[in-house]
Image (spheres, rainbow, N blue to C red):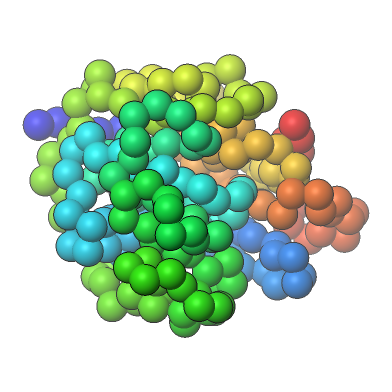
Length: 240
């Protein structure tokens, strides 16, 4: 099998952008989390290994991401793609084998993985229903490198969006071949994604990373101030 465009993107993050910021998160409590390209790739690798070893991931496995715009959400999308699965956003379509959520319920589809929103959380804050897997408690034990078993089929479904979105590209069913992960002409931007929906954020983040730029994320409803824009050297704002 040939190398996939997603694998190429991750390879560039850990080599060409190894020490420069790729993803910056400002949380509700004002915390700032900065992930270099290498650190972002490490998180994706850990999550990919978690998918393979803990959840028996295989190509075509459907993983429903019941998560808001967040740096961990982007990590999960990339990990699903690295293992050849289908990331499902919103309710609809065929039932998912795995549900990844920050609000675990006992009746969620398939195996349920609880994701703690705090970057430094060592476990999910609160009691979990029986059988729910605690991502924060498990993830740090997994290797931060991932050995791919081959590229996913170009015509395979990388993403299913069952919700309204401002993204023209990442809506409905999107194949691996259609993902916007190829570098385009232009300089590397620092993109601020504020109050935009997840598919739109994802589409723009892929473009930014392919060009060697950075993505700055803030929670929905948060209005970044001029000080943040100046300190992060934001060149473009993405809004719904």
